[in-house]
Image (cartoon, rainbow, N blue to C red; front, side):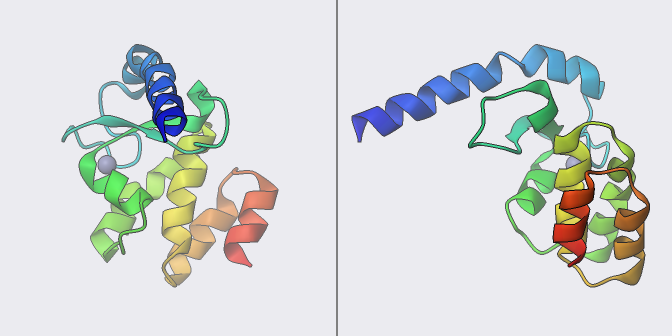
Amino acid sequence: MAKGYQANKDRQEAVSLFGKQLGKRAGFKCEWCGSKEDLRLWDYRPEQEPALETLALLCSRCRELADGKKPDLNELRSIRDALWSDIPAVAEGAARVLASCKEQWAREAIEESFIDENVKAELLG
Ligand SMILES: [Zn+2]
């Protein structure tokens, strides 16, 4: 137990070291929807070493979506442009949320985006 807690704490510290750089990169706005509400770092690949490419600055609503909350249509539209980011945590993370709905336009947007082909294939089946 204690070891897991320490590992988690170390990771949080490692992630937080990127906070300043990420805030700058994001322009202190949510990297998915542009909101400025309650921005925090989101860890796209918690199983890997934290890196700028696998972290995104997200608002509270987008963090809920990232955690699997079912998006409504407006929320989906608001994160659509994130697909065009060249940062995997931003583009692929948003693609995963978009792929969770069955909207045709969302699937087409994923197809047109420049995210990793393997991720695309996985998401679009
Ligand atoms: Zn957001």
